[in-house]
Image 1 (cartoon, rainbow, N blue to C red):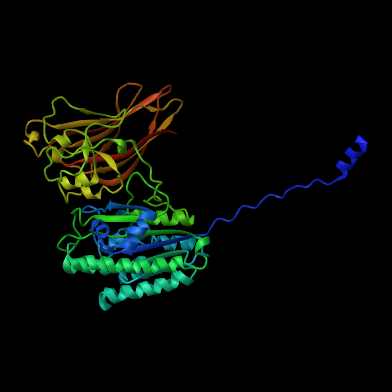
Image 2 (cartoon, one colour):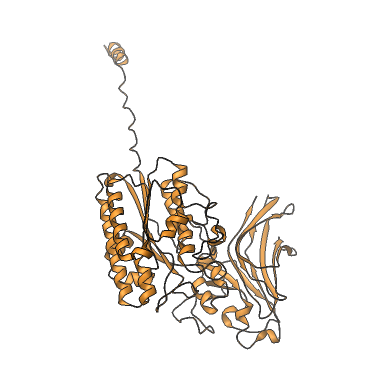
Length: 489
């Protein structure tokens, strides 16, 4: 009986449950909205409920624009930077003339998306005509361009909103850019402190609301993965105008939906990188998708308010000589005392450092993020003229980097350097406590550079210490360093 039952069981086909197919990922959709000349502080203080709702859904932060030494704080460079994802030293748009630009080599993120995935539906609607004519020349399945300078930005923005509303409600709308210009005109005509500027922000926020409701009313909206980003190209002075180096003119921002909460504020080049990253389109840009920018050790230091730099507001925390664990600052014993903040290498921020002496190309230090290290003999000399009795001589010293088993190591860091007079800048490496060997000497201005050096590792070496030394300097210029890495090859 038992044997028969066993045979019967063996003759019954096994019932195998087929694997459950994974649900397809919702298709990614991107909408970038541009508000020309919108100051972040004014925008967030205004009655702009749609923008505030977006910020609550994701992330919002101010960001510092470049300045003298790289480009004017104007619309041509600003929108070129936002749409291409590279800084003006690459796309070459330095002002609103677009003279000598390299936009053909650095296309917009919409064009990159279109070329990488021709099936994507791409769309742009703008009423500052140079965006459509110069930056978005190709790469959009549908482009709606008005001339707000001629027809007026109030009525033109309303038409842009209506067209975008129709397109985003019913079209495929995989990748879209929508621009509104009225805020900038109000800033020029009345100033950033005016009720007219505030009203233009509220009007633009209403346009944003129309566009967002169109997106949310799509029949397929629940099955789509939407990324929405709002940004601006520059700020405005209180009296009106931009193009210079004040914090108000350099004030930009990024508002983005999504889960990313970056510890260091994003930059304008991150908008294009974020859009392409969401669409799954790879691109080598200056920016990073929001939340993916590397965070270096400098960003964890504790910053202090001003001491001697009385031109910096007391509320701005922005300097210290106390580096992160393992890092140190070594000043020559004969170095005279000057401005406390710059008595040797200091760790600082863009907001603090650029306020100390505007329009001297400190604003062009765009490849540094968060906290970075600065040696600034120019500012050091502003208290008691210490250069009349001695030289600035300070060295930034890294912790030991592991090089065991390597024959070559790569040193990478961001450098922002201005050369003047007898000032000398060197990078040295010491292995296992041995003598320092100079691996780089800077002899000419090099603003906002990504440095990469291959260094030979002696046989049997286990540890390497890197030193950045600025010496033989008086009332000269400066050197900023960020994101240092020393990795085995």
